[in-house]
Length: 289
Image 1 (tube, rainbow, N blue to C red):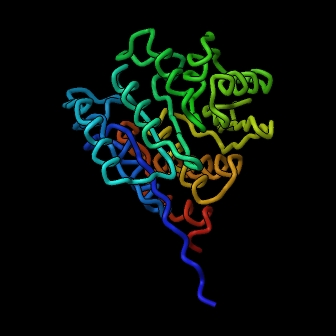
Image 2: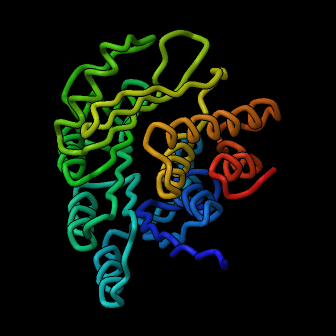
């Protein structure tokens, strides 16, 4: 009997794009595409390089183009299995993306928000102090939200706490973020000791909380949130549950970091996620290696 060919999944990825430096769309597009997912991109800004540790970059804001982008897609009756937003640079972009979610929301599709705005206990300097309230409003529209610990604290309006953490604190954050609106939460940057680092997941429907960890590698590596978030969505759209998707994303991100660390690559330039793609596809049961 001839095997039935499944319909290809399609994602709308709403992120900025940097000509050099691995983050945002230059990470999301190859990871999702390698996982067999058609990826339509809506650039929110174009930069010559990413901003982490690099100065002198050029920046062109594309806020004025986002509404016409969405309008053209809608006129073509394009359907999406997931709407995936990342870094958004202003309240205006938050409001536009909120309307895009409403415009393309359908029964069965996923609104997936990475609330990129902070790390290491601090809101990014480009944002005003009231920005988290705008991001919280966007997260109300989401099915899945993927914050780091700093972003989670800002979303629930609590002071940031440095780690190591305990399960009581992590699980309280998960539940409080879910109370904002999203059914599923994936919290990154979770660690209970100095040896392992990973993520925690919470599904409000089932009440299940789960954890996934990998060996901790010293240093701060730019773009790993985008690597993790894109791999998580790739796994989820390939039929894995939230817990397993997070475990796959943790393994893939850790492998990418380790390659970069072992090669002594300049950490400002991002992690070597490309050569770890075969292991990701094996985890997704797409190829055998």
